[in-house]
Image: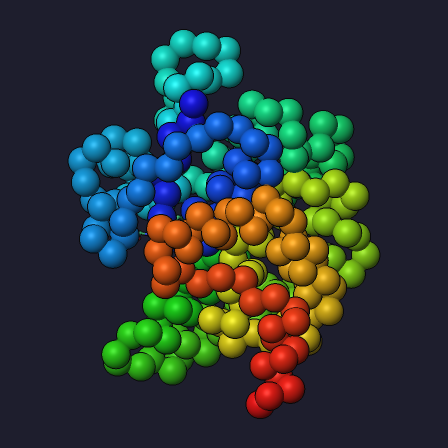
Length: 228
Ligand SMILES: N[C@@H](CCC(=O)N[C@@H](CS)C(=O)NCC(=O)O)C(=O)O
């Protein structure tokens, strides 16, 4: 059994998405960030960087003592190895998936995260807001370009790279992004959002935290645009 130390945030959704997609049994351990649970000593032993997600696998690959892992990219990679799913096995496909996974963790995560921080800050720093808004839009453009010529980020195969990028692309509305300007990205967002595993992952978030943002689906977006 896997314990998933989780809160209802983009980096957490990446892992529930994977677990729901593969059916690997897991147990959620809530780490309520609003109540600063991420600084509790028990959590820090698993996740020394005081951020969700983290997992403890009590039945690890190769047996032996439980393995604990923090950093969403490392968790997805481990789970893909464990299940033999959602990561291409050939070297080219695997390398495609891994580079887009690293790209997400380093870029389209921290940049929109900083944008939200500065947008919500009482004191407004226009320079910082512009910097992170432009960088976020640039990264959405990179994603769109990549998806113009292939179905999924790693090519023909749905992979952990898609989960990672989806977690931070789905709340595009919070970053002032109009996805109608990024048609390939919009097609990919809708394809992922309509997967039953994805719907289950976001339903779990809503059950735990009714304020957790949910993906805005194509039909709802179009209806809102028409009503405006
Ligand atoms: N690079 C980390 C980022 C994790 C992260 O930023 N988690 C946020 C929630 S989305 C968090 O736990 N923040 C709590 C804090 O900063 O105190 C990963 O990909 O796992």
